[in-house]
Length: 234
Image (cartoon, rainbow, N blue to C red; front, top):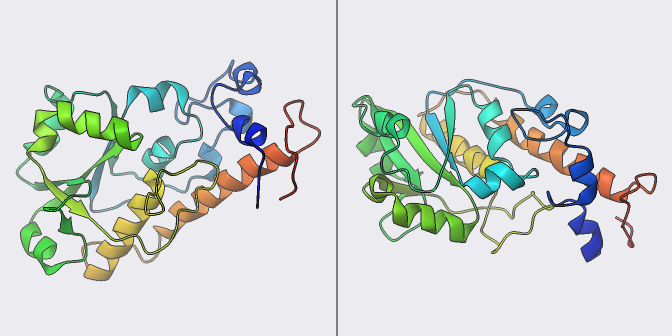
């Protein structure tokens, strides 16, 4: 499928059309009630605790991001907004909780492969606490550079097996995934390794993503919307 630049721009949070529709915002997904994404979520419980650290730019301006719906989908999760989390009391409480093994989801030479025996052995009798940076890559690197507590964490990573299905947002590289896709891939690995016993419930994350993408593409292609800019057909 191909879209003109103008068509993709209407999906951006600074679009005048979106600003007009945001008088009554959903507190969870930061979208207008009419276009709220929360209806697509199917919340479920996990043994793993997820902490999503959202950059302020994502919080204030990004309304097609997946950080909020990921939080909404995961009952055992938290979301904090900021850049430097060094002195963040709530995050530090999680990092210092002896019942957790906190791991930062971030690539690097020292990152532990999520599917490895090393990760399983490191876990021992603790529950996982996965820390996720919800930001652009440049913003995520800045968050990591400023947050001394995050720098001290062991990292976890995985090899993407498929391209991102989040086609309404341009990814900087083929291996980059949205937050909700990254969580899905981790849970898929944890399920195989016996860390989680979800019986496929995590598949609802991808169903949520697909519904979000479908909604945005239908809006972009609808000639009845005053914001219609699509010049090529899906």
